[in-house]
Length: 119
Picture 1 (tube, helix red, strand yellow):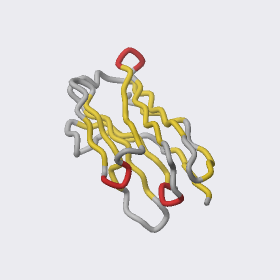
Picture 2: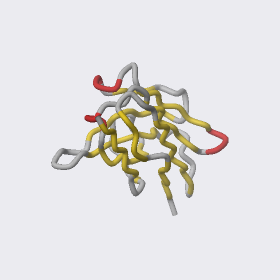
Picture 3: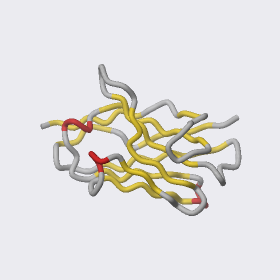
């Protein structure tokens, strides 16, 4: 059974930092991509960043470039999202997902973790 378990969300002031982690288990993810999505109230879910397990190709949406960094630890089957210089508009539920393509589709999803950035 595939499981993606996120951790690291919380409340932070604008300008602060958080690091999200996604621990993956239940199958071999080599050849897959891992993505971080977010969904704010009243808005659609959007892809924030993604990384391939093999090769390490990455994607960042424009609004987080230079502030967020995605990385992976193959030995721990864990993907991280380091978020710096956080802004109130980064407030959302952040989801980890796994799928065959860097930009999708994504087949497996975590339960989400709340990130709240206060001004």
